[in-house]
Amino acid sequence: MSTDAAETTRAWLALIRAPGLGPGLGERLLQHLGSPEAVLAAGRNAWRDTGAEEAVCDALASPDWQAVDGDLHWLEQPGHHLITRTDSRYPELLGEIPRPPLALFVNGDPELLGMTQFAVVGSRNPTAGGREHAREFSTYLARAGFVITSGLALGIDGEAHDAVLEAEGATVAVTGTGLDRVYPARHHNLARRIAATGALVSEFPPGTQALPANFPRRNRIISGLCMGVLVVEAARRSGSLITARLAMEQGREVFALPGSIHNPLARGCHALIRQGAKLVETADDILEELAPQITSAAPAGHGHTSPESTPTALDPEYETLLQAMGYEPVRIDTLVERLGLTPETVSSMLLLLELRGLIEQLPSGTYSRTPSRQTE
Image (tube, rainbow, N blue to C red; front, side, top):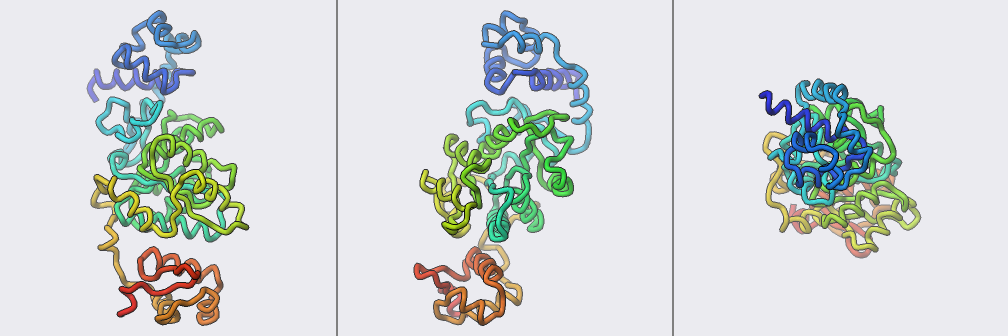
C-alpha cells in the first residue's frame, strides 16, 4: 500500500471510530469537505457548520490513533479488507439505502458483495420444519445463482449459511460485532467456514462487542445488500421482522412462508403477508418474482448452477416416495402409512421434491407428480 493510500485508510478509520459520528453525519461531512483527510483537517467551525455536536468535534479533533493502529494491524491479515464509500467494490444496492455505512470491514471474498444477493432470515428458535425449510430454500436459491446473505444468528440464519456451504455455494454473513470476534460464540466454526469461501461483513471496527443497538444496524445492511428477503419463521416480536420492515422501506422484495395458525413462529410471517409481503410456497415463487430484476449472477467457481443444470438424480429414499405416491393425488397420512415414516419426515421430503419441481401440492391438500414425472 502506498503512503498516500495508507494515510487515506487511517483517516477513514479515524472517522469510523469517532464516537457519535454516525453514517448520516459522516456522509454530510464527506459531501461538504471532500475526502476523509479533509474532514479531519477542517476544524471545529467547519464541523459545526455540518451539524456536528461538541462531543463529535472533540472526537474529530483528537482521534483514537491507538485504536486506528489496531485496525490497521487487523487489515494486514490475509483476507481482511476495508471497503469504503468511495471504493469501486462498495455494493451498489447498499449505497442506495438511507444512511448507508461509511465503510465495511470484510473477512473473505469482497467481490461477493457486488453479486446478486438474497437474504434468508428467521427465528433463533425455529421448529424442526423451519430449519428444514431454511436449508432447502437456501440451497435451491444458491444453486439458482444467488449469494445467500444472513446474520450469523442461531436458528434460521445459521441453517441458511450452513446449507449453502454444504451445497458449495456462496454465503455472506453480516455481523453486529467487530470481525475479530464471533457472536454467538457457538458459531465460531461456522464463521471460519464462511470466511474461507464466502465473506463475513461488518460496519463495526475490530473490538466492537455484541451490543443490542448494533443488531438493527446490522439488519439494515442485510436487507440493503439484497434484492429480496425471505422470512422463514418469526414470532410477532422478532428481529427478523425488523429486517423485513427495513427491506420494505428500502424498496426490496419481501417474501414470507406461511405456517399453521397454531404455530406462534408463523404469526410474524402472517403479519408480514397482511402488510404486503409475498406468500411463497416454493422457491420458484421467489425466482419468478425476481426474474425481471436479476441482472447478474454469482460468479463461477462458487458451486452455483442454474435450476436447469441442477442434477435430477434423486436419492433412493426419494425415488421410493415417488413410487409410493403412484400417479394419483395422495395425502400425507397415506404416504406415512405406506412408507412407515414419521409425518415430519414425509413432509420434509415432499417439500424438497416440490422445490425440485417433481411434485406439486393441489388445492385439496393432496400431492401429485408434476406432468414431467407422470410420463417417467
